[in-house]
Image 1 (cartoon, rainbow, N blue to C red):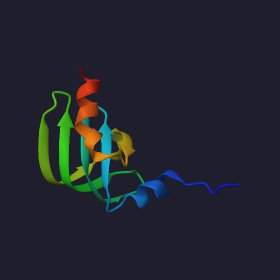
Image 2 (cartoon, rainbow, N blue to C red):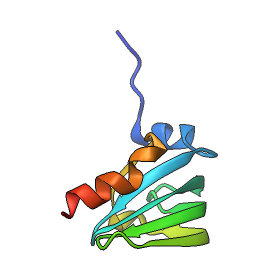
Image 3 (cartoon, helix red, strand yellow):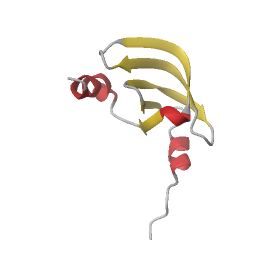
Amino acid sequence: MASQLLPLELIDKCVGSRIWVVMKGDKEFSGTLLGFDDYVNMVMEDVTEFDYTGAQIKLPKLLLNGNNICMASYPHEASFHGELTKKNS
């Protein structure tokens, strides 16, 4: 039987890597995950914020509230903005 990977263990494996985070309220972020806590509050650096209009904002560091995170992924970076734009077209 394969061993189980718990959600926080999976997030822990992403520390130091670029991730993509989808928030409640039509915002998405991509950046390097620096750390997180038991509530999945995340600290990221070198962040790009995408909104439903397709606008991009660069941020040096960011703290995300885990209560507002819908999904976090370790994706192919080329798909970030294209998927957001397609979703809202």
